Image (cartoon, rainbow over all chains, first blue to last red; front, side):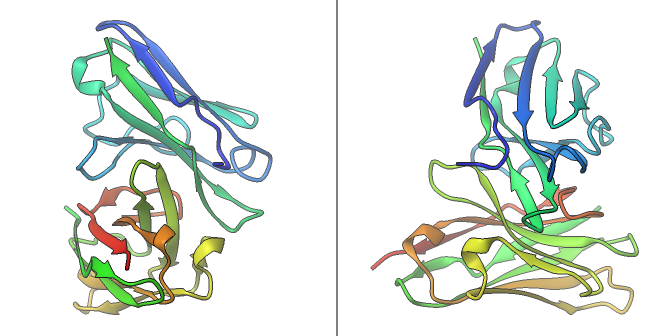
Length: 110
Length: 123
């Protein structure tokens, strides 16, 4: 059972917009930044979004992040086949004094 | 560009020990967090431990406290090259995972990742 809650799966067709949610609490998302990672099996995870809604250089603007209260979301617009991957949210948790991840969402491009 | 290369993984019996290493180069910011994150077979990412570059802060997930120790050695004077370690004692089957080394400017900000090293705990 992960501290941050994500849907286990999401799907969309090429060109569509999909959103992945991440629900936390007042000790993590409620007071700290949210980060999003993309992970393809057998490869190193990749930072997609930092500090709730900032994109590192090299990440397409099709990826966007938002946060409201104790929840956050990752939106992917103009879905492409190469977006098929696992997506994780993460945040620092003040109560646990540690980093917490969501359980991950497997995105399928139909 | 930051490069991270993990090593030291392998097969170990329950109760045994293993030391993971991460060779880091290209570190250009003045202070940062270095972390270990793992992924058990068929499971999601799990943060294991981290430490601030200056050693002022170290944190561990509850399940490894008292068993794992994170440490580092400086390779270059400007701290651009370091070696990060994870000493793992009293290993359990549930510690079986790919272990990634990661670095970033704050604790949950993993800007760069290594390719991972597999640890298998089994008799």
